[in-house]
Image 1: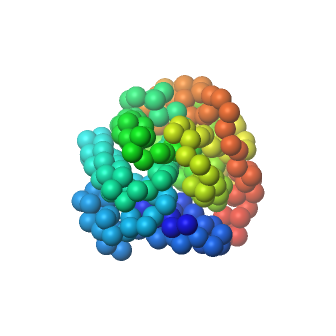
Image 2: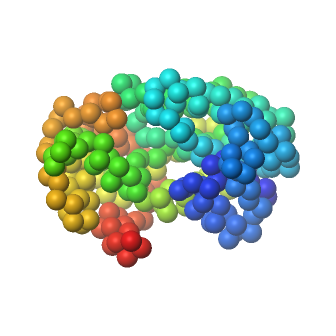
Length: 253
């Protein structure tokens, strides 16, 4: 089976490519550096030739509201058109749990728009959307974005981060299964208040900053209520807990 991974050199993409290649599949990691650009359309016709599945892991270089919306709309339209022309049988896209529950977040609004474009083309390109909770690998960036000097203000809303290895495993599994023309949700094995998760991360990494619980704290522009960032129903859970991930990350570091 030929599988094209858009964004195949990134954090999740590189791990997904490795898993699929171990399974004996022909996997093509596609990125602008390799001459495939989903926003401009460059190289899409050539890379899609003979492809059975396309996994879209592309991400916007800018998180500014208008720029990120334009990125996901242009990229998704170009991918779906190229896939339809090439006879691709399954479009897999990675999205985010709870994007419709935090409309103040411009990035989330852009992902909602992306999902709507994919669903609208289901008759031409069958699809599965994977909604994931936040990656453990981004906990440091979240702390930095929420910091005010030595204080990190975070909501007590529930949080359920997932390790990138578990995300990649789920993406690979979905890509090899039949299209659902719907959504699959994935999350980490442990659910706890947002502020507590980040406080554990900072302690484990010997970061002296203090985490302060603040119900009014914003998460990339959006308010976080109790269930804003976690699955509300059935979800596939990863196997790597936060403590195990922290131990492994420290060994790698």
